[in-house]
Amino acid sequence: MNGPAWLKVLNSEVVACTRCPRLVAYREQIAREKRRAYRDHDYWGKPVPGFGDPNARVLVLGLAPGAHGSNRTGRPFTGDSSGAFMYPVLYETGFASLPTAISCDDGQVLTGLYITAAARCAPPDNKPLPQELANCAPYLERELEGLKKLRVIVALGKIGFEAYLNYLMRRKQIASKRGYEFRHGAEYALPDGRVLLASYHPSNQNTQTGKLTREMFYAIFKRAREIADKNDDDAPTEKTVSS
Ligand code: SF4
Image (cartoon, rainbow, N blue to C red):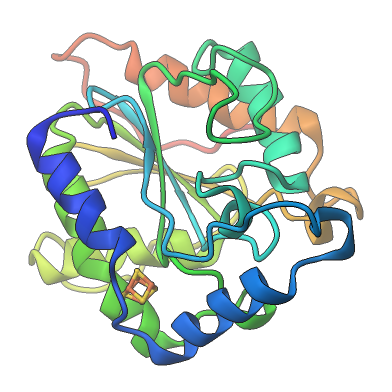
């Protein structure tokens, strides 16, 4: 694992984590049984650590690993259809070195962007339980503390969005989540100086139904890039990204 010492320590703890018995059983069962198309693959079958640039200004905060995507490959959004939708957009907006993400050793390099998730183990039906999200929150907290240059949080889906607001509530930076409504393109300037950008999750359910188009997703990362590249003395403003 590359990166600063704090991140190496964190990621080695994440990879060994067994706090959620239901998710431990599920991630390992999927890794044993496999999907037919991947029967020759060695599944990762463990918690998936974050991936990207420790000097990132943009954090992508997703939901949880896909059962046959990152639970198979060991890297966020790698080897599944959500990643196939997202990485070309990261490439076009200058955050990714390649427009694809197939495996851990594909040479993909992220610059200025880090990817993490509210839960780090694949959950049944892509639905982590509240207690499982709470169990995983301290890992997110350590990333948010360690990634000192973050300016923009791109929350993919409502669970990622809520995970960041919950973090601010635990730190007593906001008193409640009132006024922070999840809708695609919503943008909130936060008391911690960062900006929260909300996006629909690039799941099949959203991308194959047209609920999330490539143009809508591109607009989110273009806006994230604009905010990230602003001068330090520019205060972020609240507005809605057009899609
Ligand atoms: S979801 Fe998070 S807290 Fe739960 S077992 Fe996986 S890494 Fe640990």
